Image: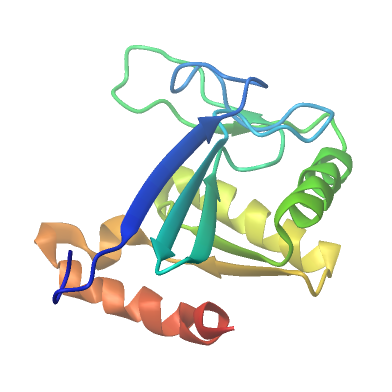
Length: 166
C-alpha cells in the first residue's frame, strides 16, 4: 500500500538454461546467439483489475569473447579473432526483438583499461547491424558513480528518458 492505494507488485526472474555458468568461466555467446548467464526479470503491477508489465534482460556481451581465470583479481578479456561475430550477434538480437520488441541496450562496462575493447566492439557491432529496433547507450558506471556518487545515475536516466517514455 502506498498513499492509501493497494496494489500487487510481482518480481519474477527467469534464468536461461543456455550457457549458464560461473563468472569468468562462461562469457560471450554461442553460435546460436545465446548469451552467457542470460536472465529475464519481469516486474508486474496489478491495480484495480489492470495489469502492467516491464521486462528487463541482462547477459554477457553478445559476441565471441572469453575471460579465463588466472591468479589476477580480474583477468583480461580476450575477444576471439578467428570467428565471424556478426552471425551470432545478429541471431541474438533477432531473437530478442521477436521475444521483446524494440531493444534498449545499456552497456555499463568500463570504457577504459582492459574492458575498453569490449565496449568498442559492442558499439561497432550495433552500429554495423543498423537495426532501427536496437539502440545502444554506453555508460561507464564505475567512472561516473565512483565514490558513491549515485546522483550521477541521473546522467544515464537523462540519456534514456525519451525511450523510457516511449
